[in-house]
Image (tube, rainbow, N blue to C red; front, side, top):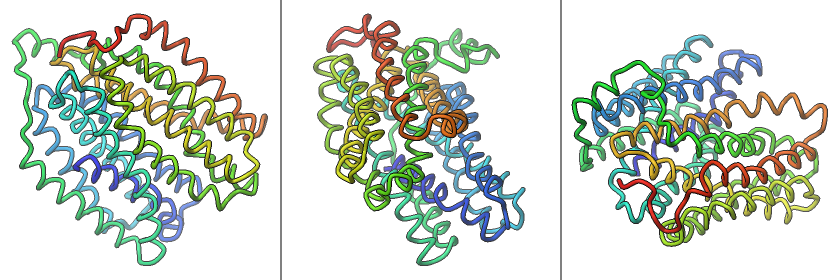
Length: 382
């Protein structure tokens, strides 16, 4: 529930902040884009440092810190008077989000029984999926029918409730040995990233790149192909199919092994991008949404489970932050890189090209992880 509220707070402001900056602070489109996107930068940086510190500070304390910072920076929006002040707040807001989201992911991974890792993390990931469908809708509705302050008030309420709920959480903290504590305090690469989580995280960069093309350019694409009405339902269908499939895919992950769900996830995501690139009717666009939900949605929760599964228990926080840092990097850098390709090849060809990249991830996954995975067994005891 906390993760649902944290992601709702993220989406509520993400879809309204650019409009607010242009309408109230006379920001240009590029400046408004910076005010929106700097949040991701703050979250990315926070995840790296939160993963390093979470086991030293304590998982529950880290969640408190993240939520308090998230709430405090939300309250600062009420006093925004300049674009620069807004950009600073957005960055700090992203830091609060990054700490909170990393803490919730680590806590879930620690309390889910090891033999139900895929299923448990799958249920947890459904909260972010639900937020991705409800958040943008609520944010735009409140902003259009009410005011930006109504969006802020709802965000504050969500975060206050989250802080109250944390009090009732029973979170097991890992007792670190003296050697482990000394290792975590060192300023070295392995104290910011979990090496065993990097192979699956590398794949997530390319998958994130593919998904960023949908997040950033779907609106432009649906206008170009005259399917705006169907496009309005894309993420609803996407979320519905994730919610329907998640209990099954999590169960299969645990019972039949990660390969049983990971290989189909690449195929379904690639097929969704292909159909999206060829869509001329609303039905095909929504079919693509369903396949993207089944493919990308399954990959996201399963790959997160793998990153935790292969890592030592005392580095669970680092494994979580490593995975999300990589996938956030792919999603964050994607629009910038892909933006250079669109004028050259066009949006249809862009989606075709990304389908090839996602399909190629099957082979990358096999060499980096799949060939070493054992069906229905954990690689490292938790």
